[in-house]
Image 1 (cartoon, helix red, strand yellow):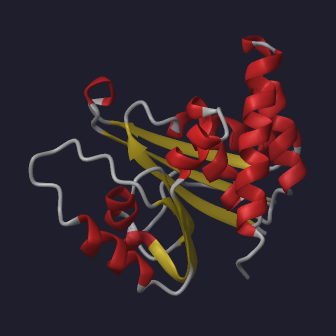
Image 2: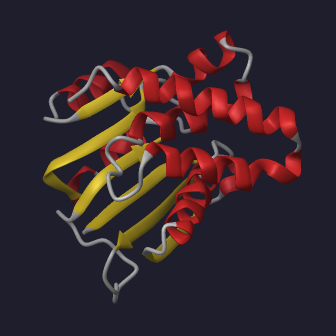
Length: 194
């Protein structure tokens, strides 16, 4: 079994924290793991992208070829669209529906959302708004991970939740609890999709 995941977003949104949690869960599950990261001008809001490849058998390349990604997890809708050519035909897109307009020529937001809605398998949610409503504004990325948890079937949601506890433990109990809460919100939301 294998799972190819593309993570994308804008610097500062927490994409690399999602990658770290998935990587920790994969390590604990004794899976093979390859990761390739592209850090844009992250301190200035540039794009950040990571390829994660998980497998029960050895993996030889850390990059995901076009048409071979099982999942795109994106903190920002335009960044989700950017990687659609990498998605296999039955793959999932899990994305925030809230744009981070950090460039002057950002495309029309309604057009971006409508284009995503045309894809066969999409989970989309205003994760930033949900995080603020639940008093966990720094944990929107873990809501997104919760939304993706049932699609990462090489790992269980419980594997991912346990990894959250390990990764954030050094930051204190409140940070761990906030991230658990965020993950659980995303997981609960995703149950409406098949």
